[in-house]
Length: 363
Image (tube, rainbow, N blue to C red; front, side):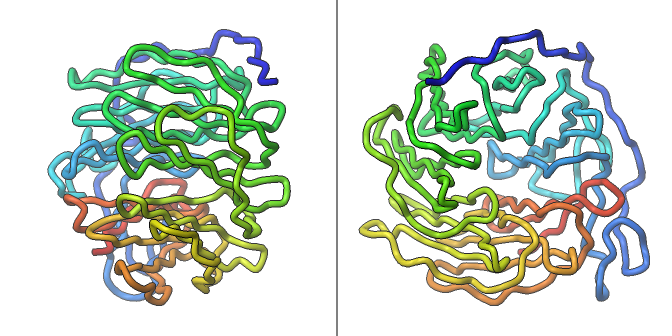
């Protein structure tokens, strides 16, 4: 049974928005510190900051990109661009807005419509904390959604003003909590014993697909047309995941699941609308979980930390995968990839060896 942790007061810093780490914008060449580019063009750009866990990226508009980082003192910092030009950031090229609160996990952000962001993270009491930004361009105060949670929070939206959260409880079962536009539901057990943080995606109105790593390190799947809840068993999809899962949808009734296995190779299994295809090796040699972004018409870009801590990417053109290629850099965590500029390009975000955030526009 899912036992809610005793809820203690999460220490919040009641800060007014401010900026930090103001520096001149810069790009680095092969001899500069931070991200050392192997080759010629200075294509990595510094976004400043000083943080500890991978950045969280979300877009609520085709021209908008919002970036959240967890600083080394567990504070939340935020920056954004709204013109489609990744060279123009607010509140400044290397500045950040500081937001109240302290978080103790990576953050998860989701947008269900224009001018809306919902941000989730683990608080100091091991419960889920929520923060939202709306069309008034203001951040609401953090609220506790309760729960006793291990790991990070999976979140998705299956329609306007609808949110679905998936977590691993203290008893190692998967749990769900939903927002129906008016109120949050209770935490409900989805049963099973899992060893990682659940991942979820929605490929259409009312549809939710959730994926977990079981005690066999294999991938397991459940799906709902409507409100998620207990019932059917988790369906085993096989594989042997080394870290958390990565899931993306390229369209209606289309799913791609990516894992890194013990050989450090990236593997894919996809749902083509009729059946699950077999696991397929995508090759490569990765030191991180893959990050994936769906963009354009049926396209996917993957990004990983390579064997020498540079960043490697691979593209799916809707039919087939290309070859892995290095875009240089020297990173300390797995990179994060996100579609930008009305879904026509992809940008990679990563933590450099200087502890700051860097970005590289691919397409």
